[in-house]
Image (tube, rainbow over all chains, first blue to last red; front, side, top):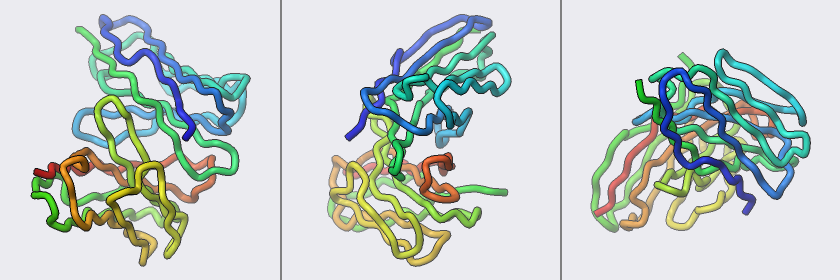
Length: 111
Length: 114
């Protein structure tokens, strides 16, 4: 099946630093989603992207839907300890009701 | 409060003993889905349902069954569990299966099959 290549696999940063992670694919997708998973909980939706080139912000989070429709990135500015968790990209292909997930980026923020 | 509720949250059981994990949503969502999450593999879809009485296989359906007799409930059934089904399971729902509808997840069920 289609795959999303998410990188990096893990990140260790200092509080206050900016973070960037991305997902790429060889396939075209119509919708990109970014989720965060805290330990012991289910993924929670952070940002949804519906148009190629779209840039959307949610507080300190910014995500973009790549112009080729094959990639997306998520930036977190001025990280804080509660940003710790696993971030997943996910995407829908056109005409498909299946949501494909990346393997996640585990973020650790040192105070 | 809008939510997806899974039960149980944790279960340790033995090989071959049938088990059911329930999932219920209170948002009147048409689309429901089951995923398993394993280290290094991310989330993989097991089964999904576009509406009542409509279910389809996801990427890893072997060893699982589902049913959708009512809109709000989507139980996951392991008829004869095996150790390779030890995993963290998530149920999710969305308003429809259309690809502009983000899915909302439950808090997960951790299954250990001995």
